[in-house]
Image 1 (cartoon, one colour):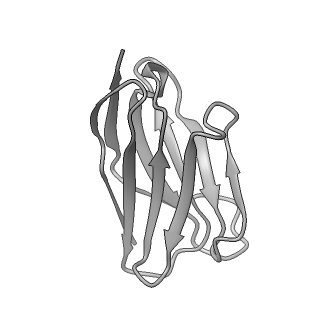
Image 2 (image 1 turned 90 degrees about the vertical axis):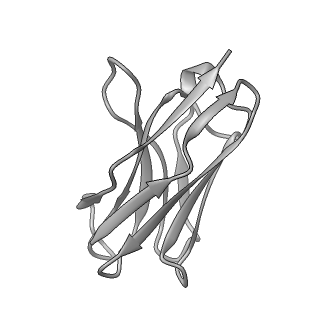
Length: 117
């Protein structure tokens, strides 16, 4: 399985970006977004179930970010609105190998999001 993240870039505070994560090679189930800011540990951002009916968000992004997926396109998205400088990080997408899997087995290469103040 390969996960290809894209959509990162430079945006001013208050702006928006949409990240995409395209999966190929095998069916993936639960998916999620994580991020790692410079000098910090990787942290959870959001997750979505295989059917898209269950989503979870970190408190820091609730109400600003929306996770979604299109299984016909094997693609997951992260719509990020009202971006803040503290959202600056490398964003990684991840996927689980089984429908009841608890561990994210597959990881993308990351896409950099930079929010200027």
